Image 1 (spheres, rainbow, N blue to C red):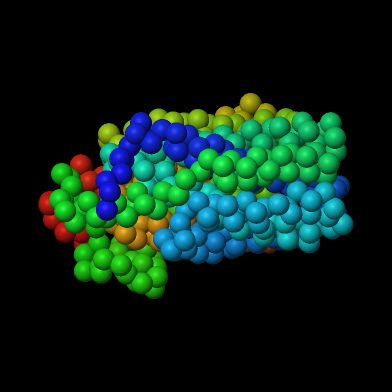
Image 2: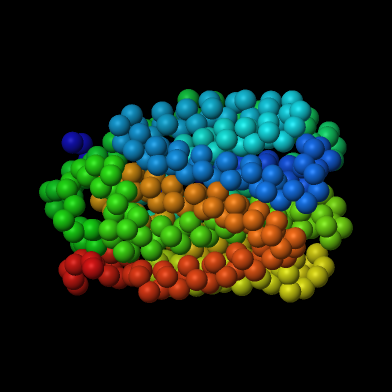
Length: 432
């Protein structure tokens, strides 16, 4: 097979196109994260205090996105990354129209199901494609840039749609914004995005010819092309390192579910305006996205283990701080701390998975990791709804998420290990 160059600089044009794609993916989910929860009662008929009904759309999103991550990873190894990305955008086309026409909350839940399909296919492919065309020593930076672009998109969309909703109304504003984002994404995908599956195949062939300088700590006793069931077992329980990463990915989504569905409701209850809410919640997304410009690159130098573990604990602390003080400045600061913790862990959990999974089935491994990670939306949102319903206090949900993050970080500390090949190569001993 013809050698294909690996590296961000060597593939800067396609790398840039993929960054634009994930920015647009962030816009697509961001338009659902501030306006819709805040106006659930007045615009879409959700009764005040109906926490389980309110969280239903995030539960639906998490479950569907998790399944589509699983499907996308395996499918992309058969039909290519670009085609999966294209189908993700096509499926998103009805979403803004459904929000605009929604007679009740069930339409919002249905639109969010389609959003889950879109996000599972598109975000998975932007991440996998960039990993295909970059070197092993750039994975942290690659993941950091990917998640920076995506979550800055989420934050920007939350702020912009808040202003558009106040100017045009929630329904018309989201219709205009959503159709513009999806239309642009479709055109760019068809015209400029290339399939990167050939790079993954070339990397596999190169590894057969000569071993890398720092051999990765791949799972032992695994066939070159394992079945879907075998990869799922490795990611979920057979390899304790991969299982620890998967559970951390699942639990950290509790924070995002909280910020999506509960934080706006909490702020409304405290008297914040829609635009104030957009900026406070945006602090979480901006810090999360912006910090990943260096937290991913940091892990390429110092390793993945400590950024992951400390990120879990710092983000949990930020969540807890929200309910320990009052005022817009305090809430924005607390949200920023939670976002910084997410910036430490988010690109580096994924980079850790990429470190210790071979290119031949890396797409499947990342898809299954993302399955568990985004299932955290559903499990977290369901837990949030139950805690709020049983206690009658929104504040209790912040304690629930913070405690979950502290415990999950401890599990990762005990069962995880350093995965960076240069810092912990396979030659130092086979993985447990």
